Amino acid sequence: KGTGCIVRTSLAARRVGVPSAQVMAPPTRDDIYRTMESALARSLEGILRLPEGVLLANRDTRGRWGEAGAYYAYCIRCGTWLTLDVAQTHEACGGSWWDDRLHKAAATWAPQLEKMAAHVRQGEDPYFGLLDLRAAAPSERCSLPALSLGRRQLVRMSFPRLGEPLDVCIGVPESAAGASGGATLSDAERQPLRILLYFHGHGEDYRLGPKSVPGLAVVSANCPRSVGGKRCFWFQEGAGGAWERHEHAKLRKCDAMLEAMAAVLDASAAALAALDWPGGIDAQVCIMGVSMGGHAALEFARSAPGRVRCLAVAAGYYQEPEMEELLKSIASIPLLLAHRTGDRCCPFGNIQRLHRLRLALPATPAAVTDSWFEEGIRHGPTDEELQDVIRWVLAQSR
Image (cartoon, rainbow, N blue to C red):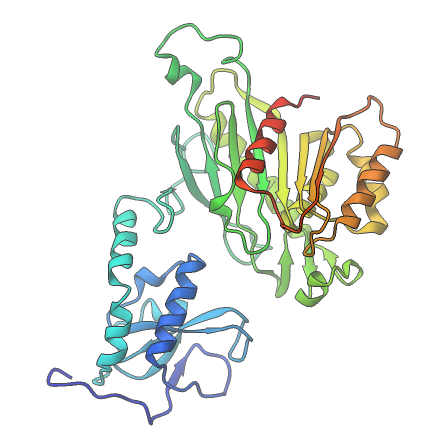
């Protein structure tokens, strides 16, 4: 080190925090490239905290060394593989080796990492530039930090039953009072602020959900990969293969996530109320979900129908044996079902049956039931269709 580079390609790497007894070979430059591309595409947290000489170098897609999908880092000073959490504090290993080729491979990403670091220095999350309040103290008026008007912001809540914190994105529109410049507010501006609780789909980043619009705040949480050691799909838990094959009988309801999301909604409403909105906060919430989140939207509405003003489900699904009980619970809630007939991820036949049963059930008073069914194989709405759904939500009342 200092006069050249010593490349450790023939020695087996040591492991810290890697649970498997199988030895991981030292990484290659291609490993660095592939892993960094994967991490950035998935908005992986923590890579900016890696010390000098500790490189993100592997994603265990099959779970050979621990949890499937976990990322690992490699120290080019001591030749040690590290789990991502351990790697962030691996600063004084005392190693004297150095692999200049791997270091140069990682340096390819330096410009992008510097842009991300600039966001962090401004108090924003590194990937989307959202106001990052995840480490901020709670405000005096509610359990969440004080929110800002006209911003999308991240907060973090802890739930012991989940085993890990839950990150939430809250989009707050501009205040009608602030926009009026002190002028008298119109009747429309005095309307209560509505809240849209959005459930994202599998593989969708919760920070990319709908943005707030005048009169509507958006709350979008991040569904954890697992709860209690079981794969989590919002309010379903069990084996990932069963979920992918729509074998709902092999999955169980995840009550811990239902409880957590009810608490998220309560805390978000309190934080929004602390902004002293001119018309207050609507007591009922609008619900929307896409794909896996479509099932979550239906399940949440079923668990707390009195809290729901309207319900929009795009490219969703629901377990057929429980459809009638679901529809009895949400009979008075305005419902929008959007789906393409050739969808292969969430087959149309499932949601078509839900729609037919909905129309067959008596409702007193009768609730709106809208269906936007189109030909095509696309899974999920386009950006334009998403805005149409938002407009539908704003038009509903109970």
